[in-house]
Length: 220
Image 1 (cartoon, rainbow, N blue to C red):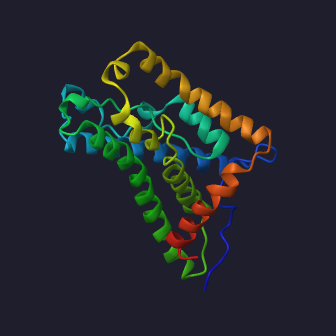
Image 2: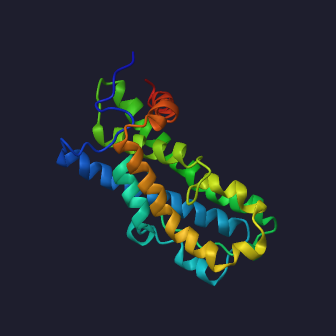
């Protein structure tokens, strides 16, 4: 027997009718998603050989040390986001292009795993005809992060597929550093513009994927 979730999936903040309890749950879910994503990247980077002197600063599970302003703005505007950049020294990686891709996507798949854990709890609760908006929002937020990180634009994981195509001189240039700092805000601005213009690109191509994964994970 299936049941409709308590809230719309994907869950997005409704600023015209903001409910305090759901906003708090969403904020906590976003911090959880950020932490899991960042720590998974750090773990994979260390596993692949980048265990340098800064690696000790990666594993602290303090969400506020992983917070990125543009990433938080994106969560608020679109229901997904990203953590602050995890420093990776590609000189320590045997196959930098492939390894960096694995590191970046490790974060996204960690979000899927967290969604699976929360979804399993929802599934068990459904056997007693119980529903819980806390776990529902946790599942929704983490699936959103997982799905949207396949977009090949920085700072999302999908952009790592182009790493091997970028010349080394450009990677280490000041232009590259400034671009990586500025573009996330440009990306958020584009998201907000799409919403203001009522462009249905995410609703048409991404939300159905999110809903399908949610239904599978939660047993609906």
